[in-house]
Image (cartoon, rainbow, N blue to C red; front, side):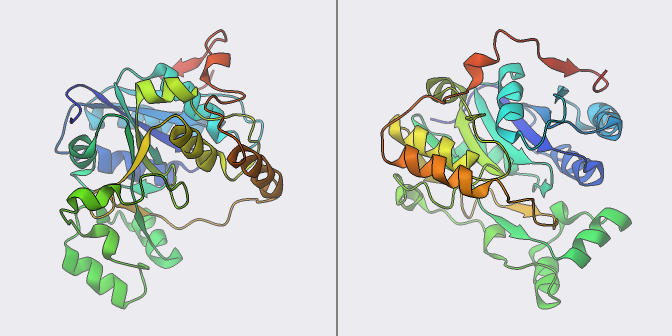
Length: 285
């Protein structure tokens, strides 16, 4: 069963407005027009708000800026805030440095299935090619496959497979119970299923494993994994490695989760419903 109504694309960002502008540009080129964009801003400065405002008219759909104060890496919580502000029945999570091809929304709509979430893959751009995309206005979202082959030969991209389109059929369910390898930079989930697990767990502070935690709880709730590989691949801009000082503690929390059958987040969306949420037209006040 495909999605018949509005799709909400949630784009997570933090102080990288040049990359965000390129991602919003790629969303403006979507062949499927029945979607909205919510920029989940983890405490960026005013430049990000300005970028969102600039692209509102260009994307051609509802584009909202959901922001909270910068108190360190809180990607899980800001995604939850964006989900609460969303109007769609189907949510696609995308990172603010992941460029999408023109059929990205259409492919996710096609792959949607009841009681399943869809995980996509990506190709990585080199630091040099990323710099040229951001500096020179290159548009990899509309490049031909031949152009990507040329960039691969020059070392500009790490692989080509994520750009291929293959009708995998039943093979898309081959990892139905596998949590490893699923990333929130390209992940689609029914809103009702997010409500079931209460969204991301904001108990994860700092970078790492908050997306794995969500996937494990979805699986615990009986919601299976469906691969979007060879259909929904994104183009990931290079960035410096994030601060990983919180990773050991987050790995400990995930290991504890894996021992049980918990479904609900310890600090999920329900805790935010009673709090005011900043969804702005022009950015943070």
